[in-house]
Image 1 (cartoon, helix red, strand yellow):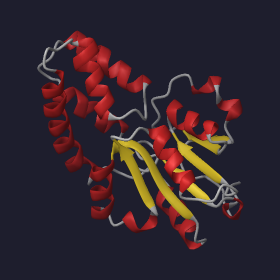
Image 2 (cartoon, helix red, strand yellow):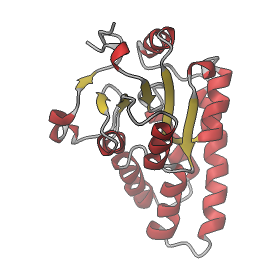
Image 3 (cartoon, rainbow, N blue to C red):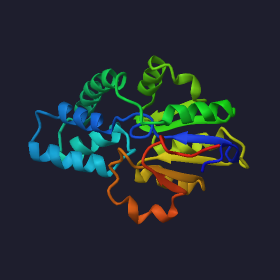
Image 4 (cartoon, rainbow, N blue to C red):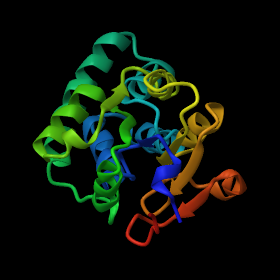
Length: 218
């Protein structure tokens, strides 16, 4: 049971928490890198899944700098980001919501609590997608890359007085680390998560939920 009045602000990741978009991102990375060495691509997708919440900027840099060892990293990353964004922006407009999440957000909104997005996805892209989906108004602020997630979580706390209590809904290890570092409760949303060893940490979660459809709140 989540008591909404117990918290002053709520943080949601996006992919796998608001939108069922983790597999979409996997496909987009593969599409952008389709002309690269298949072995490198598979290795990169594994790296991507193991680093949920890390921005595409950092991931593409890792690919071209450390994996491919390109001689024109900056140019390659820039081109990859453009292609990735054009694919993802179109797909995000149609992808399904994580079951129950919108009803839960509406209930939080009724209680006049501050709601934030802290995501590894591109910030401008997220704002555009949320506007197109008519849900932008639910969120006081939307934070995304290229600013990294730990810093964006700090910006949420900075936007609220120190005595305020927050809760973070996420599906990645980085989401959990952000919540733990800033002493917030953490709820793990596992249905679409790609975090494989979450069970090693779940005794530190407030709880785990499959999705929001059976989450009890008042």
